[in-house]
Structures are given as structure tokens and as C-alpha cells.
Image 1: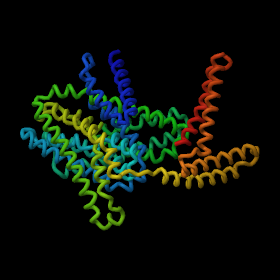
Image 2: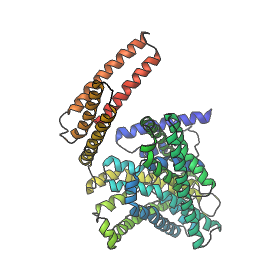
Image 3: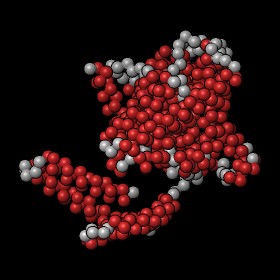
Length: 519
């Protein structure tokens, strides 16, 4: 009973923390970290220990899968070069830079162990940076690069971590063998992820029940990661590939009901997972501090040295990778030279999160390095990057002018495509309308015209209420009155609960469509 109570308490605190974050205008991970740290000093709080398997198999896969589902494959492909430079090259450079710095401060610790710590703290988080980037309106290419980096750098970091631990324990092999192993893991992950994506796509196409669609979608990342781990391929790559493929194919695979329901289910799952995991990080910090054998001054010095190294290396690498690449004529002809503000903002968006947490927990004691110190440094880096980068990134982006308001551009593009879609809908109506009552045909024509008008109205003056906005406001008042009548009838026993639920669902669906039109 106690584990269930503890879980309920943690989830409740995570929900309250997320609500507070929205009210204060902060990102939820930051507030939950601080809340967890504060709660860890409360007497009587149960001991909380995070198992690495829980994070690697239970938390990380759905987070990466949903992030991949929401990533545009077309935009991802166009930005593949900078994404790979950051997801692979920057991870390796950062890991070795941190390793050298830590080894200089702790000469007794083997360099391979220090590089392992570098691999742990190298990858930025997929959740925090993109959440802030979308909220403040960074240019779409910047958002795509940050998303792509955080999707692929997890695999690079985890592979490098295993190689470093292998070198430390004496099981490492030569450069060619390591290269072959990395290629096999990455290639195997791509093939496995694609195979499972095809299987899941086939199931989604055959399934007509939205609940079964939800079940398949929820199971997909966990099945992929379990099979990938059993086959010793990269589970991270497999999950990301499956998510990218299915995200691109979802419009062709799922019914409208399944898409709406699946989106709601995944939003709830990710909301709870993110909340609980960052709360647990905060809860463990106090215990980690007490378990470190080094004095506090040395611990702080090492932590700050790692943090500064991460920042300096990321800035230097991004400036070099951005502008040296433009010396190549082919790249210069395809990609415009961005102002220095763009790589500056990307460099500052280096918040660490779940992957750093999972990688740190895989470090084992008794292998010739201070495990408690390394885990604390990793946790402290998560806290520092969220506190410093997470709170100042919006200000920096606005200060440097790296903010792109695409509202008008999107509205124009949507209106143009909606016009073509409405024309196609009317042509289909003319083909299929034979024998239908003229009143029905006219009603469908009016509905199509109204949908097209809504798209064009978004281009107009937003200070004045548009006809569609007035319609939505008045219709919501009417729906509220209808709901009231149905509820009174249920309370008086004139209709059953089933009748109320059916009527309420129809009214809810209509109101949700009104809310969508207002966005």
C-alpha cells in the first residue's frame, strides 16, 4: 500500500508544481526541480531512489517517441547537416572536453571515467529547450535544429558512455572495432525502428476502434526499446526512427476520432512523466550531497568547472560549425549565412534533462571513480542549466531579435490551402449529391464557405471582432443554455444519465470545434 500512496503523492505534487509553473510563467521542469529540492529537507519524507531501468525503459522512450511524432520529417531532413553536427560531433567534443577538465582537477581518476562523465552531461534535453523555443516563437529552423539535436544526441551520448566504461574496465577494443560496433548499433536501431514503424502503421490502418489505436500507440515505444535492448542495438535510435515515420504517416493511418483521442492521451502521459521525473531529481539532490566523500569546496569547484566547460564548448563549437561550414561553396549556395544572434541563441539553449539523469544512474560503484560525485555533478548540471539557461533564454532571444512571428504567414498559407481544399470539397459534393435533399446540399455548401471564410478572416484586423468570432461567442452561450436544460432534466428524472452523456458529448464536440476556430 505504501508504494501506491507514495506514487499518488508524487503525482499530486507534480501536478500542483506544473500548475504553479504555468501561473508564474516558468517552465514546469524548473519549478518541479526546486520543489523537489525543498521537499527533500522536510522530515518524514519517504526515501526515493530512481532505478536506471525505470528511466531508460519506462520514461525516456515515450518522451522521445512523442517528440519524434511531433517533429516535421520534411523540416528535419532539410536541417539534417546541422542536426548531425550537434547531435554527434558536439556530443563527442563536449564529452572529451569535460573529461580533460575533470581529469585535470582529479588526476587520480582515470581519464576514461572522466570522459564517461562528459558523455553523461553532454546531451541537451528534448523537452525543455523546444518547449521554451515554441513558447517564445523562435524561428522554425532553429526549433527544428534543437528538436533534431535532442532526439539524436541521446544515442551518441549513451554509446560514448558505454565505450568509456568499456575502456575503464578493460573490455574496450580498437578504433576499428569501436567504429564497427557504433555503426552496427546505429544501423540496427534504424532498421529495427523502421520495421516496428511499418508493423505499427499496418495495425493502425486495420484498427477502427480509437481505444485500440491508443493502446497500440502507447505500447509502440516500449516494445521497440525492449526488443532493441534484447538485440543489443540502439534503442534510442529505434524509438526516434519509429516516431518520425509514424508521425509523418499519422494523417493517412488514423481516423479523426483516433487522432484527437491519441493526442489527448499522449499529452496526459508526457505531462505526468515529465513532472514526476524532474520532481524526483530534486528529491535526490540532498541525499547525493550527503553521500559525497570529497569536501564541499572541491565538489562545487568541479561542478562549476563542468558547467563552464559545457557552456564554452557549446558556444565555440556552434560558432565554428556555423561559419566555417559556409566556406564550402556547396553549403554556402544552399544555406544562407545566419546572423551571429542565431547560433548564440542555439548555444544558450543547452538545458539538460532526462537523458543526463538516465545516463548518470547507469554509473556503477566500485569501478575506480567517485560514483556519488559524478551523479551529483550530473544532477547539479540539470539544475544549473534549467535555472540559468531556462530562465534567461526567452530574454536573450528577444534581446537579440531571434524571434519570428509567423502568425500572418501561417494564416496566409492556411487560407490559400483552405481555399483549394474547399474547392475540392465542393467538387466532391457535386459528384456525390445526387438524390440528396437540396436543403442538405445547401447546408453543406454554406458550411464549406464558412470554413474558408474563417481562414481568410485571420488575415484581417485582429482588434475587431470578426463574424466567425461573433458566431463562436454567441454559439457558446447557446450551448451553455442547452447544457443547463439537459442537466436540469437529468436531475428531475425526465432523462437518463445515458441520454445526458450522449447530448453532452455532442455539445462538447461542437464547442471544441468552436475553440479550434478561435486559435
